[in-house]
Amino acid sequence: MNKKTINLFLAGAFFVGLSTPKLAFFWDKKEKKVPVGIENNLQIENPDLGVQQNIKEQVKNFTGKRAAIGTGEVVAIGDETLTIVKDEKTYTVITDSKTKFRRKFWGTSSLNEISINDLVSVVGRWQNEERTQIKAMIVRNISVQKRYGVFFGVVTSVTDSGFVIQSAQRGDQTVSVLDTTKIVDRVMSVISLSDIEVGHRVRVKGTWDNVNSTISDIVQIKDFSIPVLPSPTSTTN
Image 1 (cartoon, rainbow, N blue to C red):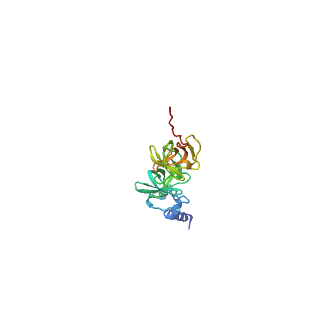
Image 2 (image 1 turned 90 degrees about the vertical axis):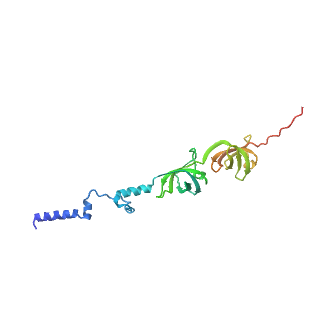
Image 3 (image 1 turned 45 degrees about the vertical axis):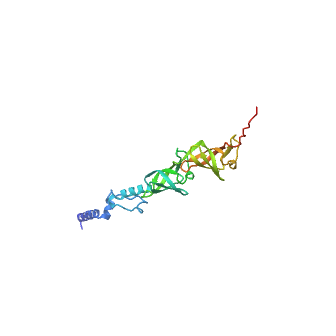
């Protein structure tokens, strides 16, 4: 076999190799490689989209789209979750150390401050295709707001941990007293919870839940009925 014949043979083999799919892969500079760590878990749901487009779609679905729910009602509370209902649809709200809790007027709050029946709005990201699970970035409790010096009323019942007052403008309110709550009488002398009785007129400073009609996180309680005012006496001219 002369030199010219050898060259023709090699050229023919070269072009045959290019026409073979397995060999053509190495010569196709436009071939798209799947990123390491994704190819093993990648499931091509729509082959017409191509590998890269399928990767983008799956990564986008994994990270989640922005979720927002306004004014849902809390029906259950877990250690790090809330179950809320809005428009007859149930949602699971997942919280963590990065979740920000806010009150109605954007004061700092916490998961522990949320109660059953509270109305909350949530902003976060969907965690499933059905859009029923949300990883929360912000949970705002519409039902809770700070109110100081506005809860005046008469005590209607007393318990070991607080009492109920008939307020002047907001009806019955349940007051939950903390160990740190300062309780004073009319002249600002310190008294105890046991000194407060049914019929006493009081003022309460704390956090108001306007849906459940409760006052918690109490800072101060003032009992205007203690000390008892002396009875007026008549004088004879």
